Image (cartoon, rainbow, N blue to C red):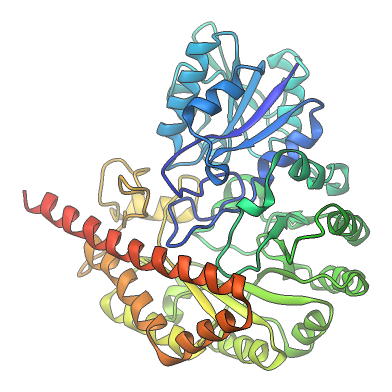
Length: 483
């Protein structure tokens, strides 16, 4: 039976597809690959992967494509569930016999609530859903499929859990699904070279960060990995079928969590002459960083989160600000670029800790950064802490976006309300980027490559437009509170 793996249309510029870690509208055009959908699509013969947002596919075209499939499997998320349910209902209205399943972190944590979100949803794939999707598409009786929740005779049935995949080499490569169904030039990330391709070499993360979505909901805290040989073979294949790609990104939660394996992969990649980047914790030594740099590493994506050590302890980050400083200096020395991510509104944020984090970011002086608001997704320890301590602003604890798709502050603390946290993001960005160092770095990259110049001009326009949107959202929030 045929299956469509769908990341539906949503807010303009909303990167909520499977694979996106930041499920909101970004400051500049940014799209991650829908790897979590590509993986099961690779298991199902005759399947199709449709990633609507990057390809500019609207609802009408999406529905037309869905008409040709018996099964439609939709990746959903906490902020996109309502929108995705409407798309599912429109698919059913046109072709009532279509079986529709929802997958993703939200569905994994709240399967009953997800099934009740719309009469159009027939089933939910819990946790690691690759083989669950495959078995549904094969037409097996739903009662026999592990990891499945489904509706039958007006009741919701939860089958036993499916074991996590231990031998990750069992999974087929996503490269050919990308080649078949995606236009890779449509995928942009501001800090990665274009065009880029991202993929996973493993799942799960041993870190215990209280806010991090994927390890607490789908991947688990054990880092389950593909063999270095398997990864190198797919990279060689990708190099062949995507000769235009300038950078490959390993999107594992923490690629450097298993350092011997990371070094082995780097060693195998070195002869290929590839440029690659990955997620890393800020705790590597200089020799390791330099070795990876010599093997083609260009950039680390690093979650610093906060410049306050007490905050880092509360969120179980497992890295101190001093360790972060040493790591950053080592990267600068080795010539490895860093894109740093920071979060405002973590427990228990104050005006002083916000200023501390802004100053810490300026001290680190990484090439680029992203500032997010704390997002307490269901299934995370942060969500439970917020619920127990009364930090949520609204009764609807899953309402984490403004109407335009930008993140809103859903938490507030004594002496610091949600609007102050929200406003601090704008101040953080301006105080960081409107300094001589970052401006000169950006200008340098523009002068070195004409295509980068065009791209940076576009990104600059989008960035300041998003800051303007933030001000409008803040005004609307304050007006609503005053009414």
